[in-house]
Length: 588
Image: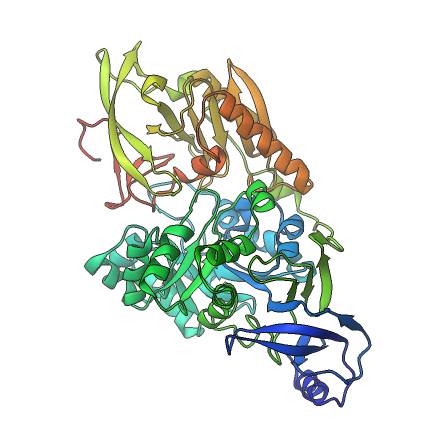
């Protein structure tokens, strides 16, 4: 909020009656409202734009842009900060020099681990960050009650509490089972968001036809799960905005925008998000700037691509009075770039302060003091011994269900395989590219272990595991060898969360994530180096996936078709029910 006195001061400064804090001269303004490039001189007072024609105004500081383009800061419309593996302070080093000045973040990961208290811990640093974090309050914590064990809960009362926060802009993604299943609690959360004049974000993975229309009637306003143009068009036709996603394993931008360009579709209700992207991919590819530049390379006019990364998002989330354009009264989040055919920021200003130059953050924020209790969230009762992963079956072979990975997407397909039974235990078969998959309950509540199989990793020996396992964030482990699976679980328990890989009974690599079992306080390059070593080891063991630890983190999702695995067992996502891993056994 801004006071009346502050508002009066901005009005006076806009007319030249108060000195500017900063004048950015000689810019070519990308005006996202007119769609035109305009000569401008940006006047800034108290962190906000007050004038586009401020040449001649008194200013305490003058910055000569020397004819560069001035763009509004980029907005990521849907991100789980936890998936970057970095605390928000360290994430700034990767995203701000790239021009991202606002994250619309759903903190469901840490909320599933530690509830509202966990969210408050993660967001404690917000005021000191050189970028905005605005909250999409998590609507489904836990994600699948009765089908998984989670550490935290956000009930209707807690959601209403967070919706009251000034930093909260929406109700976070809500999956179809809650809406089409006519679940009162979740529909009440949507109505609570509307009562606060805030939107409710969608998560319509796999929906089409009448089911999609019914979902839209649930009060949702968008979807980030469209994987191609047909799905994007189906959503736009029904008034659902499309958050075009491109992360580490969800590569949706090219198939969507290729169709948009071919059909000449209106782009006003398209915007960008990363959802989940590992730090090495952000460093190597970029963040929202990567999506903007890919769109331009595909043929989207530069101004239109910039609108998708700024104004479209701000309008959709009803914050265009604050963000999304370089217009009077808005925050002075400014990108300066020498060219528009490929945008490479030379300077980035946040609230009128120069925060990044030539690809480097000028003054990294100091990390917050994270409490000890958030570092002690892993209590493993079972899963540390190979015998814990036995799946009993009679005979020499068993017909089982298999989660079939889908390239470059988080969706999967339901498959089957006939696997050998050795000593009464169904085992993995690398010759068929089928690994044993387990989810180990890590909150010390019941010691559950869910078991099934997965195809698509390419692993020939060993095992890999992660305590980042959406959305419950138990320990997920996939492997050829059960002793190696147990070694990975022991390593994660010792680290109080993290990533691990093992072979021959030995842990070959690890990345500690002690903050809620999700995040590291280590320097960015240290985290990236550990992740790259883990990925390299996985490839040495035969893995063919470009980002195996991102892939494994999504296999357990009970809300993305077709199958998911939790500590309770195998989930049929469309039926929202537990089913047997064995094909011949009926659903429980």
